[in-house]
Amino acid sequence: MKYDVFQINLSDAEYDKNSIREQYLDTIMKPTADAIMAARGLYKKVATIEAVSFDQVFDIGNIGPENKIVRHARMHSVSVGDVIVREDGVTRFVDSFGFGVVSF
Image (tube, rainbow, N blue to C red):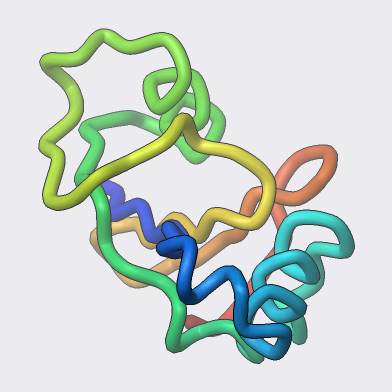
């Protein structure tokens, strides 16, 4: 199954804007569905990963194998605050432990 990975990758100029920085930090420091949705406009699709579960997307997004990843933009390892959308539309965000539910 294919999963799209969405991440926030801010430029230095974007990070210097307090409102954008606060939205971003909320997604990684206090990840909730509300924080993810408040920052929705900052997310960009960075990759599509072939996997069998959200857990495996996390693993592949961190340790590979690279041939399971199609990169669409600059991508960091899959981590807290990232959004993962399964090809059937089921969506989760990476929480501090496990995954949270979000309508993205």
